[in-house]
Image (cartoon, rainbow, N blue to C red; front, side):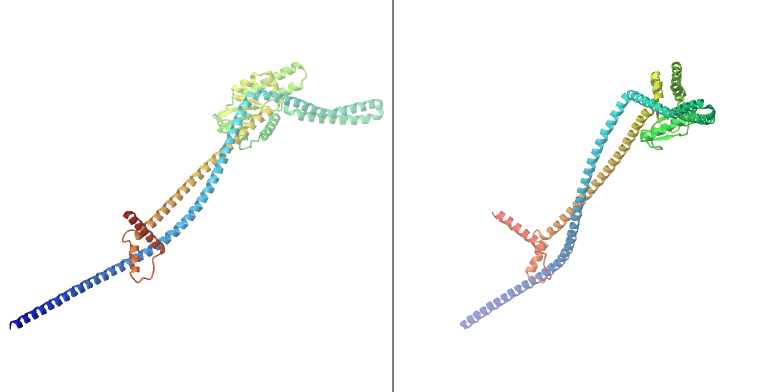
Length: 472
């Protein structure tokens, strides 16, 4: 009885132990199953999240890749434009350098020429009187020789006719009865010849006689020829017979107004009487010649005095009058007057009046023409300098624009590198995570670009090197 009870108890304990074991094992399996289910759910959730991130990152990557390609194209285009701009800039700088060199050479040459002109002007002022005297003497001698030749040429036909006439008169006396008619004819021819010679002599000396209008016209013709020889342009550097009003309402008509730079003028007057000088040249009596010469000097002095009282500086359109020139068209007449009265030149100069002949006036007007030429060259040099400055400013603006383009190119390249680094560097970067999904067997249709994977490999290699250094 006791053995059966013990056996039953032992069996019950065995069954209870087995049941407890089975129940505990079942519970353990159920717990493991629940954990497995939970793990699978987490994996599914992580997989879905990773797929979503992969899709978003793929889209971002494609957009960045397009943007990168676009930026790369822009960079190439901008680099080409930059190279072209640099080439153009180099060409322009070479042209500018050449232009500056040429401008400096022209400026140096201009300064030298200007200095030479100033030196020549000072030298001319110092030697003007002595040079004029020498020229006057030469011209006077030539004029006397020319007058003698003209008189000889005019009188020679008459002399020949007189010789012929004398011969014929002798023949008439020998053959009076037979040649009376022929003598009358010869006398008629001689009369006509005398009348013609008188008319020619009148035409040759009319300008030196009392016909003031013809004398004035002749002087104006000589003055016009001197102006033409000087190189000055009528209507530009000088004007003739300009009718102007004075402050009193009267009208004046200067023979010539010569324009100078810096708003200055010179008036030339050619209305000089040479009647007394003609009488001085014509007469052989020394007393009469002396009286005629004094009258000629007084005539010039009176003309100087009268011209100083005309007050040409009060005329309209006269700009800062410097001097009034009295033009004597015959050098010998000029020399005769001032050799006899040397103080008259200084007195005239004090009244801002200068008496000149053809030679001295021509030298003065050519000096004026040279001054005008250098004045125009100065204006050309100033215009060249202005254009060179404007070209320089444009080149500076162009270089600044090129620098701005280079700056923006560098910023775009830096932004592109920063964006790629954010994707491919650092722990848990998107490129590395996406590559791991592909290795885990994720179904993909496209592969990551080699450039991105190369950056990722470089990043991993750098990380390993850092770990090795730390371990050492």
